[in-house]
Length: 99
Image (spheres, rainbow, N blue to C red):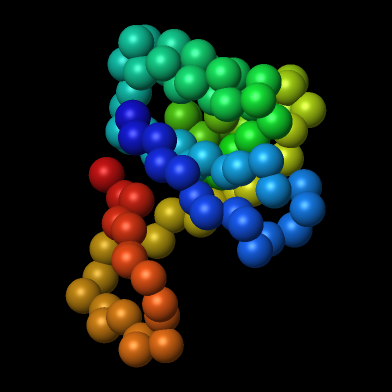
């Protein structure tokens, strides 16, 4: 499982506490699931919003944990890998969140 921090300083007020993204393997182990709930809970307790793909096991766990903690959840869509050039108008680093 990977957790990444998304800069939300210029986003809506409900995301100003911070936003973390959660990405996991297609078939997470019991330990990975436990780690997801633990990490998401810790950040949610601090008021951070959670972002994940709810169509994955880890994403569903993150969404349920965010809902239980009453923090915003941002639904991410998984995009298939493709050799697509990044437009010059995209600023900042490009992060590949796929496993």
